[in-house]
Image (cartoon, protein in one colour):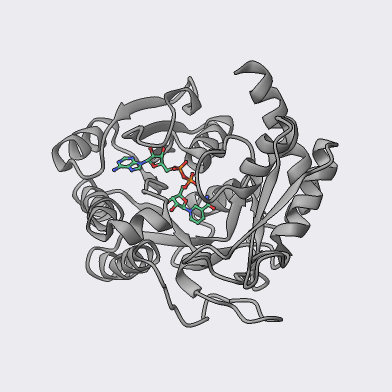
Length: 314
Ligand code: NAD
């Protein structure tokens, strides 16, 4: 199968591209390299530097490659930037996505898999609960609103043009290649800080000194597995949570990274960050495409080992 991976130079997209190549598919990565890296793109994949806001370039890349399926991972991924610049966020995450959907229809592409966000769409998930896919959507940021808008546009494209799609709502993804300088990749930040002998900061869930916000951390390998299942047509027409259902506070996470890095952490406690959800945990039990999920301790071992090699080589 020929698969176009939009955002395939990024953390998750590049590992989807790797897995597709390993499974014998042909891959074209398109990416504007705004946060992705050219060296992440597998050597066996084609690459075109395309901004999904640039309709002409996008249509021409799609026309040349004639993909059968599209994996849409391209996005500006910063929730706080989306709050400061909602129009710019929508230009990339809404209009750019619509350009891609338009290209799919124009070139008769069979299937599209969309990277959505469980954390950003469901909003606060109260203590003891997990958000299933029928949890009321309550995005609290332009980033989450844009993701939800694209989900609705996909309904329109399916209904009007027969474009088959699958929506994957990721929990907090972690693993090798995540940007340690980004705002979201707490596992990447903790891993690099600890391996460099630096302290780590736990931002408060409510009051400074508490164990921090609660998240559902999912290993990138499991996210790739869900994407492959979706690209192969095993999840057509579905909205799927890609999360483990395990609730972990930032402090618990820090202890797991500390054990994997074999470094005693110096912990600072910071205040609550404006806009951070206190608790986000997904329910992925029903007809789950990834079973069993990689246990957090195991995924973090892999991740810390990768960052250890990365820091040595850079
Ligand atoms: P990433 O920043 O590593 O990947 C995004 C990629 O999109 C980058 O390579 C970037 O250069 C590219 N891109 C950005 N704007 C573009 C544009 N205008 N045109 C073309 N390419 C563009 O982030 P990631 O964590 O790999 O995220 C992948 C997808 O998963 C995104 O859609 C993100 O919203 C979604 N997601 C991620 C998480 C997470 O925890 N990492 C959680 C929920 C959803």
